[in-house]
Image (cartoon, rainbow, N blue to C red; front, side, top):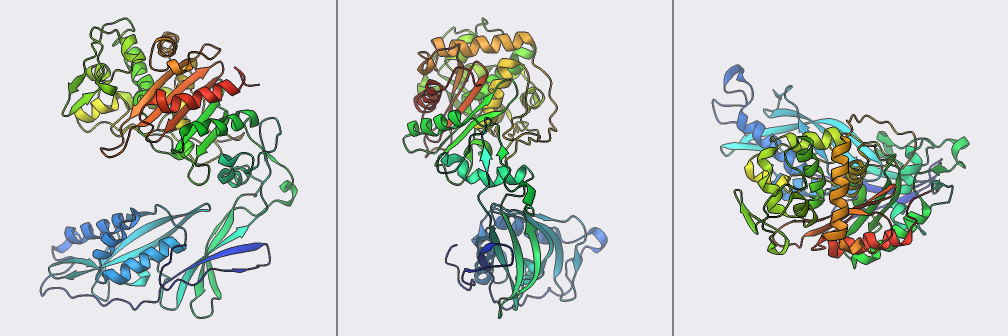
Length: 546
């Protein structure tokens, strides 16, 4: 926990059922005194038309800054910036809250007895590793110096936070869950480091109650005694299930090979997913570093040119282009901004097949007029399940392909940039769908709810995609895989991040009944950074999983 003034020191105590690690939070502060309304004005000065729009704008801006972690900015919108920043920081840090969602209500705004304008809001506070604490509160605003300020007081953070009571997070330490691979081989964090942060979720999600547990408690500041429990997380253990291991879809051999393969990332952040083409079962999921954030399934990345699999599908579906059609590949193409190819390469008179295998950005962008503005997102959702809600047994980010705001963003989305977002889990699934024609919701455990609804790709489109991906290995940017046995198809990707960061490197591939996707942050190129990782994995495992 960060060193925040006035936090109650962490301590340990043994409750009746298990050992708990305790984190405390709270700040003793006086309730801020507000300003006053200018004579003749107030929050409803415009009659029955509703509250002053400037007041509502300030309320929403405060909540947006708080939710985004811009605490100095949020505090600056209050009547007591110093105290406000201290409390907001200690509240979120002390309770291990990450990425809160704070939503102002559209109704229920009223003038309170103290002359402030009360704006109701809903707080959804994700407590790291446990769950989301949801509650309602009110944001008081006061007119001050010709504008509106949030009238600072402890109770706006939570109605029960006060000078005499605060909140404390308690985590209950539970026995390490027993998790196995698809064959019953035990999976433990020491042997498979990338799985260590996920084992508790896997056990808890399978219904055995072996996941993490804890509570947010309201406590007396002076005595430390619990006044009430505000939120509880985790299931009560089922004694009958305590010794029953949770079986996953993972394969111990593939997982070990994936962990080793990420050594090719040279210390850069990277992740890898391998899954079965026929049913979406995840065989391996690995991250580097292995502790903390699960980039493989929850990361949000621009997929770069690996997304051209989806773009090609959209174009082929409506017969807008054929593999042998000539689609010129110039060095540059300007669509509101200048787009270029990796290393400013060019291929005059290239066919669409050549554009795909050499990953020509300008050629793909030149075809943007063949697709309606929302068509790429519709194809991604309808055929590949991207953007629908997935339930795989662990938390995931399931992708986003927004309708482009303008022609420049549409051009960027054609090559997996702009606001298109994915991760290795999504791109491994995209690859599996492209080469089989059917989307299967990925899974790490059995029996997950499946709310997805998709349509199969036509056989002709699947055949064309397989041909394009195979040519990328034999004659294109994925030659790094050409020496491996099996009929491998692949697509590389290079995704821009920002002007002061190197590009992320991507590579997706399929062989037999397996699809693989890897990303290396700041890897510069897909073939050069993600290529060796996928090569290492496929060199170490059978051509087909058992």
